[in-house]
Structures are given as C-alpha cells and as structure tokens.
Image 1: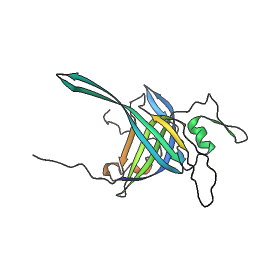
Image 2 (image 1 turned 90 degrees about the vertical axis):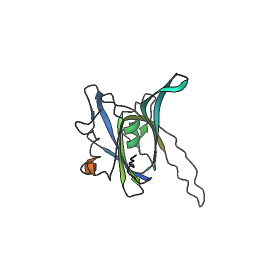
Image 3 (image 1 turned 180 degrees about the vertical axis):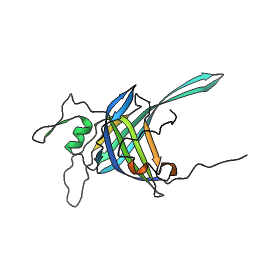
Image 4 (image 1 turned 45 degrees about the horizontal axis):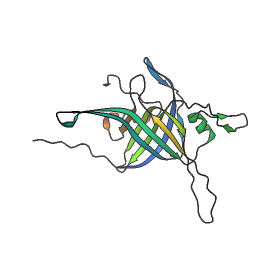
Length: 202
C-alpha cells in the first residue's frame, strides 16, 4: 500500500493589500471589470464564512445514501482601521455632495465588486485571493467616549455576500506564492481581476 502527503504550508498569520474592482458586465456572454483597481489601506480582518446548500437522500436504511452539496458562496466581514467617504460611497452606493458631505439614502444601491487581498502565512509565503462577485452592506460602528489613560479603538466593519458569477459560476481564485507554477503571475495578480488560464477545466 502506497501513500503520499499533501504539501505542507504555513499557518495564516496576517492580511494586507486589500483591493476592489467594480463588475461592469456579467452575463452568459462574458464578464468584465473596471480597469481602475481601488486600494483600501488599513485592513484589520477579513472573516469569510462558506455558504453551502446541502440535501440528503435516505435509502436502504441509510440516511446518507446520497448527499448533494452546492457552493452558494461566502459571507464576508471586513474590519477596517477606518472608512472614508470615498470608500463607502464606492462600495455602498452612497452620495458625496459638492460640499464633500456623504449622504446615505434609502434608495442607495451597492454595486457588484470583486475583492482581492494577500494573506500572510507563518512560513513566509502569501496567499493571493480574489473573490469574483459580491455586494457590501453597512456593518456595525461604535462611537465611544475618550477615557483618561485608555485608547478605545473604534473600528468599522463592512458585511458582504459573494457568490458565483453568471458567466462561468466561478466564485474565488486563490494561489500560494510558493507554488512554482504561479511564479510568473504573482507580480501582476492584483493589477487586474485574475481570470483562470485558457484551457482550464470548468
């Protein structure tokens, strides 16, 4: 009996270089993004929760005779050091008026965006990640009074839902910087939203 081991990689220890790109088209004929990649400094945490639809069929006295799983996408919570009006208007669809005042309206519609970032690992490598299509909504924000001798860091959160694209059902792209096959693309991975290589399987 033979056995092989999966490649050992480091443990996740950090996150940085958060970027966004608006989806300009996603239909049965193709998908495109804005060329202007927006960099978002000050990311503290990106929490991703996989959304899976599951159904099971019982037969032959076995409750798990058949199990079907569908990948619905990810719920994403991004905690930032701070959110400026330019970032929230870009991601949430709010309006910044001629006086520089951000106005939130009941009819605001958040755009579809792609979200990319790097995640550091304990072995010195990085994961490079793109989430292909999702929308954000306002998260929690706490305002706390100053206290003598104490700093109360009040960091805001954006909540998002990311799912499959209409065009090809792709949800996410991820590669580790130690993967030699990907060495040629790492330098430009966040210049545009990454698309899988031609001839790759669906």
